[in-house]
Image (cartoon, rainbow over all chains, first blue to last red; front, side, top):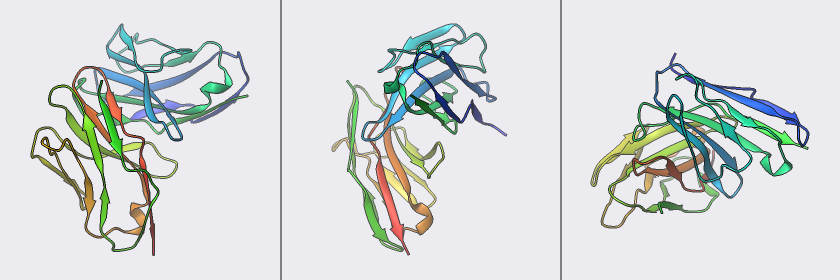
Length: 112
Length: 111
C-alpha cells in the first residue's frame, strides 16, 4: 500500500532533550516536506527536500533540522526542543514539487 | 507571496443541507489548486484538485471550479452527510517549493 509513515505518533518530552521524528514513504517520491499545524494558523511549512541531499527552508525553520540521505526517508530533528514547538507535525511527499502531496498521519508533540 | 484565504468556521449544517466553503487566493503565475480534508485524529487527504483555469475538480459529491477571473476555488456539495464532518483546507501550489494552505474551515453536520 502506498503510504507515508511517521513515528512516533505521540511524544511528550522536556525542554532541551533532543528528539527525532521519522518520516518514510514507499512511493519513490522525489519531493518531501514537513509541516506544523497550530490552531488558528493552519499548516506552515518547516523544511522541504527536492531530492536526496537537497533540502531547503520553508516558512518556519527556526529550531529544526532535517536530512535527506535516502530518497525514502526525511527525518525531522529538534536538537533543543522548546515549549513553542508543541504542535502537530505532518510529513508529506509527492512525485515532484508540482505534484499532489500525500500526507502522513501526523505526530503530536508536547514539549514541557 | 502566495496566500490563501478561506472562510472561518465552524460551519454548522443539518444533514442534506447545501454546503459552500469559500476560498480565494493570490499567487504568481498559474497555480494548481487543491482541497484537502482532515477527519478527526487523522492526517490530510486530498479531496480534489484543479490545475488550470475553468477546470472543475470533483470527488465524493464535492466540487470546486478554478475561477481565474475571481481568483477563487469555492468548495460545494449538494447534500452533506454527518460523515462529512471534518476540517477542510484550501491550498495552492505555484510549482516552486511549497503548498500554501488556508487556515482551514471546520464543518459540523448534525443528523
